[in-house]
Length: 83
Image (cartoon, one colour):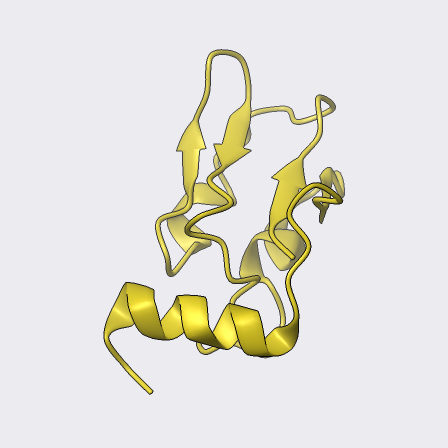
């Protein structure tokens, strides 16, 4: 499942540089996560780093982009050419 940033984001810029898949970019008003690039850090880290560094806990699982652990690993492999 990809992650999503909710509208309580304060644009602190903590999450964007932490994303190993470059899935986080500045949107029109707040940071956004590209679900085609988000692997919840599967393949890189044990936990999503954006969630770990967010000072206001505005990053949640995106119910519209549900994926299994195996699907996230496949996406990781496609994005990185590894596995």
